[in-house]
Length: 326
Image (cartoon, rainbow, N blue to C red):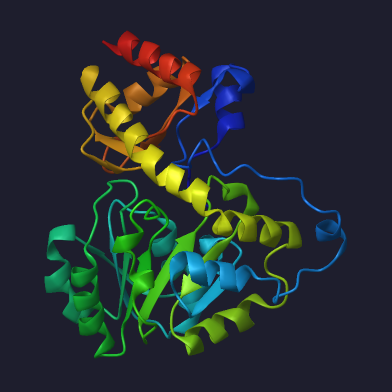
């Protein structure tokens, strides 16, 4: 399987530092996530029911009528390749690698595209996959640009898949606001913005026939009862959402300033992470890890992604570790 952030136990063993002494910045998940209330006992005793209000809560939050809850957007990423015959699939690099890997495993031909040549590459593609904003670079695309690319693909029966895992702070830029239409598939997750990666819940927004095909692939009860209970409450908590949309950009700017202060200015990022491209990425990653700071290391291109510290003690720990690099 591909490498991802969050392997804290492995890092604790490798660097012989107790779990409790780490600052984990490797995941891009909101460290101050939505506060989970007590879960009613019936959530553990009864099978989940599809008419419990999860779909309507998601429709309201995403402002999308045609939506399917899934067991994390990763479930959709792994299943969508089964819904097309072998074809040519365009992906960017660097980007969330599970997209390309899932299509490759299912026999599709992967075409790695330069971000500056997306328009020129459309004619040779059947499917284009983009993350908006991109993970890990933070590159963002306008709705107008994305819809133009979708129209070019859809005229030939193609698909545009847009993974919006990190777009919650900018809901006005989401393609979820567009009417459902053939060939336009939007993936959303409550793992990042809500800080609820552990409940494994996401959503696919798209045409009704495609959602029906996905639903049949997943089978009954793909999402647990406790997960559905938590997701409904989080999606309905408008006050927390607004406060978090105001707070996260300030935290991201603070992280940008801190990294720049110690000679590591980020090349890109979004509200939940900053991305530093440098030939010294591996050395920086390991030197920080020796001090209990876990980052996400990328080999190609040589780069590091920094997530947000959870509280003031972690901010201070990060600053001390950065200061020791110079």
